[in-house]
Each structure stands twice: as C-alpha cells, then as structure tokens.
Length: 431
Ligand SMILES: *Cc1c(COP(=O)(O)O)cnc(C)c1O
Image 1 (tube, rainbow, N blue to C red):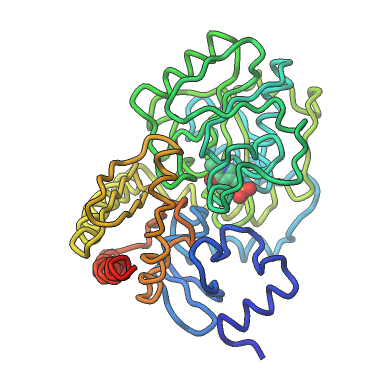
Image 2: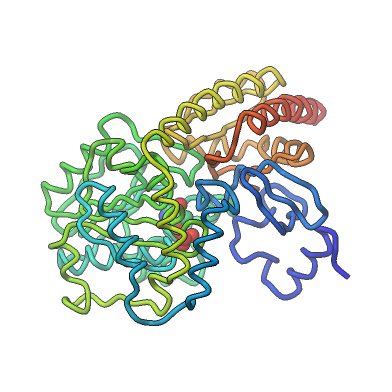
C-alpha cells in the first residue's frame, strides 16, 4: 500500500516516465524525492503524508486566488453538472473571450486552446500565415511551451535540465528559429515573421525587461513588417488587469495567454488584432483546432477568476510582494547567504549565492544561469521544504505568491528562510 511520498513516487515512476507528467515537477535538479500532493487550500498544499506546506509554486502561476477558492470550486461544480464538453459553441467561451478582450487594450479577438504551448505555437503559425514569412526570433531563456519550433534556447525545465534544446526535434523544425540574448534588440530583416518575447522573463527565474527594451522591439518589428508577439502566459492577468502590455505601455500584434486565465484548469489562448486573426480557419487559410478548446469547466473557472480581481487587488498584491521581497532578501543575508530577490508587480524572483558573492539582478540568461547553477539553490530549497515552505524544485522558476498568501504565511516564510539560509550557509562552509 502506498502512503508515503516515497511510496507514491515509486508507484508513479513505474508507470510514468520519471514519475512526473511535466519534467519541472521532478526533483532532478535539487535531488531527493518529490512530495505527492493530495490537497490544496488557499496558500497551502498538503502531501500524502499529511504535511502542510506554504505553497509558492501555485501550479507555476496558474493559481492567482490560491488553491480551491470556494467561488471557483462552485462555478466548476455547477458547470460540470451541465455537461463537461460538447464540441459546439458555448456561452462560456464568448464570456471568457469578452473578458480577456475587455481587459487587454488592443486585443480585439482571442481563440481559446487548452495550454500555453498550444497558444504560443498557434500564435506563431498565425504570424507566419499573415506575413508569408518563416523566421521567428525568440530570446535565450524565454520559454514558450514545448512545440518544436520554439523549443530552442528555452527556459524553465529546459534550462533546469541543461538541455540546449531537445532531442527529437528535427533540425528543420528549428531552422527558422533565431535565438537572441534577452534585453538586446536584435537585428531584424524582411524575412522575420515574428519576434516572440516574454515581456517579463519568468522562466529563467525573474529577469525584468530593461527600460526601453520592449518599445525598441516594437519599433524594430514595425521597421521590417514583422509581428511582435507577447507571450503573456505568466504575466497576463498577473502583472495587472491589462498584463505586461499595459504595465509597460507597449502593444504587441499578438498575445499568448495561459495559466491564470484557466482558473486552475487547462486553458491557453492567443489573440490580437482582428485583421491579423482573420487569417485563421474557418475564415482564412491558417488551420488550428482543438476538441476540448474552450472547455466549459475551464472557461467557467477562468471567467470567475478574472471577474474576482480588479486593479486594487493587483496593486495590493504587488505592494505586499515588494515588501516581502525586501524582507526575504534581508532574512537570507542575515542567515549567511548572498541574495537577490527582484520583483515585478506580484512576480517574485530568487537568486542565492555564497556569502561574499557580488550579486546583481541578472539582465539575461547567461547572468541568470551563472547564479542559478552555483549549487546553493538546492540546499536552500530542501532546508525550506523541511520547514514547510514549498518553492519550485528548480532554480529557474519564479515564486507565485497568491492573493491568498496573508501576513501569517509571509511572516512564517521569512522565519523559515532565515533558518534555512543558516543551514545552507553552514552546509556550504562544510564543503
Ligand atoms: C508555462 C508557459 C508556457 C507553456 O504553457 P503550458 O500550459 O505549460 O503549455 C508558455 N509560455 C510561458 C511564458 C510559460 O510560462
């Protein structure tokens, strides 16, 4: 009978490759055995052994209100009782699309899909179909899902695993993908269909765009007739009501959404200007489809989340996170580590190093990787996990404090962080 984390992981590993359905969940970059989660409530998750953790993973940003928010659970339950999928238009799709377009200035239409990967892949196909060009420029350390063409120079799990890209992707599939360093405006020409960017990079831990970078990308695209695509799978409806495009006052041609807009269920979306999206089937020649796209449960959950939060919530969460970031950096330093804890709105980054290291917030993937792979993160991760604080099991992920993380949880995290830093510093000293 399986009842410990180790038992469940062994069972899973026997029938699921690596024991996980997404490599970022494995503990391969921090060592040890993953905890198997049975339940979440607000800022907390509980594992199969009954241990409670303050959860800063929050499904990698899919959860904004915290786990099992009663309003979200209620709308999902009601939607489920009406039937879970039809393969026909439903009101929920129109309502969620309306909610997205109403909140994101310049986004006239969206099509719903079932993951961020699908959204990014489809946005790129639209851009190629619209421009009649093949090339896509992306940035090193930015992750746009695991479609072949966008899997070069990726962040998140690709970065964690140290894979430059992936086996199984034919050279031809990435032949038109150009990978450029983040925060440097690349040279473009009239072969470029699109420039895709995370408008705040959150898959190489947290790297903010330099002042003027996104505006300069907008102008560079306009000069050569390329489309600018903001991958807002993380930033959308998290940085604020209008996402990164409102936050930075730069309007792309196409957006990719995911995570928050599904309210914890599988959803993605891509959207943009009406004339650009007019190339999509059934009206146009660019094919894209999905049996479960716009699923009634997912659209109900996503709509509930979008309607539950407003500017005041984002402002409150952002200021709470800024204060927490400063205290967390202080606690880690007091405990004997060097630390940089950048924040952008409610997004929180975390870089740690041995005491005495000169540590600045990174501006690109090379700088982020140097800090992320110095061997300190796994020590801090486990010391925190033993104290009931769950971060992502890899150094390239950001922390996702939710609207459910109150003072009690944040204070407890600061206390645990101080002790964990002491433990990690001692372990480094003993090495
Ligand atoms: C998570 C993520 C994706 C992929 O979304 P999935 O739902 O995991 O397929 C794409 N882009 C960014 C920026 C992401 O963070």
